Each structure stands twice: as C-alpha cells, then as structure tokens.
Image (tube, rainbow, N blue to C red; front, side, top):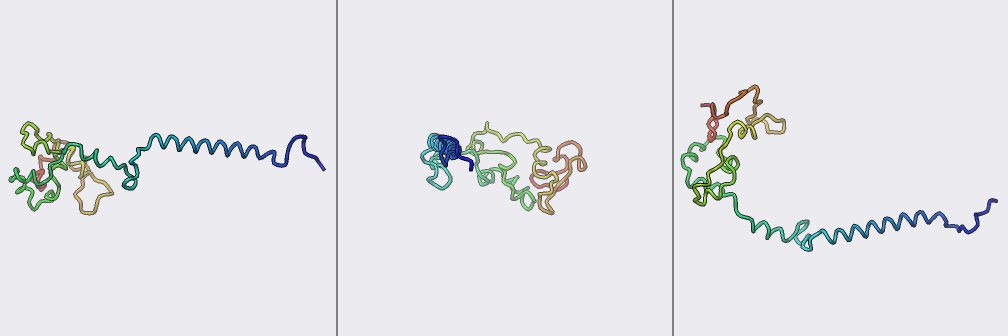
Length: 159
C-alpha cells in the first residue's frame, strides 16, 4: 500500500476548493458593496423603478401640445383630413412637439418638413407592416422628388 506523503492530511486537496470558495465569496461581497453604492435608495419603491423618477419626469417642461390644441386653430387642415387615411394620425407625429407653438409663441413655428423622408418613415415597404397598409419601394414608385408632388399630405390621395 502506498502511503501518504508526510504532513498531508486526508483532505489535503480540499485547499483548492477552499480557495475557489473564498474567491467566489469575495467577488459576491464586492458585488454587494458596488451595488449598494450605485443603486439609488428609492429604487424598487414602485416595482422595478426608481421612485424619484416620477418627480424627475414631472419637473420636465411640457413639449407636446396634444391634438386638441392643433384642431382649435387649424380648421382647414381638420377639414382636409376628415375621412382621409391620415385622419387618425396625430399632428405632432409628423410636425414634432408643438407645445411652445400652441401656447401662442408665433416665433415657434413647426419644423420644416422634408416630405420625401417624412412620408417614407411610415410608407417604405417592409414585411412587418400589416396587409393593406400603403407601402412603396421608393426606386420603383418615384425615384426622386417630394411625395407632395402627387399626394396631399393631410389627405393622401393622388392629386
């Protein structure tokens, strides 16, 4: 029978396992300390959210006016959109946030739109869009020029 080397106990090789366990424990303790330092105290107050985020969001300035603000002043556009496919598309989806304009600041005009790129944002052909949604391949439909050369933007029928 082969004997054990002098000074080695029955669990001599367990030192390797102990080293790995100590390394794992130190990593876990380091993780807990870093997490304690980086995660805000109010995190988790409302589920997986930071409670103070509600106050932060409420303190931001209002940038969108809402559809009702546009409808109040732009009757001709409302009439043009009536019954069209764009009737349910909200004004600010294309024209951008307009709270400043709607508040009476006449200098805050809606941004100038590029009909070619704006229309293609929704209408370029993609397999993920529902059947029957108007889609085009720009090179096949009209290689260049604005969409508004043939289509009215608020009531997109030909002409």
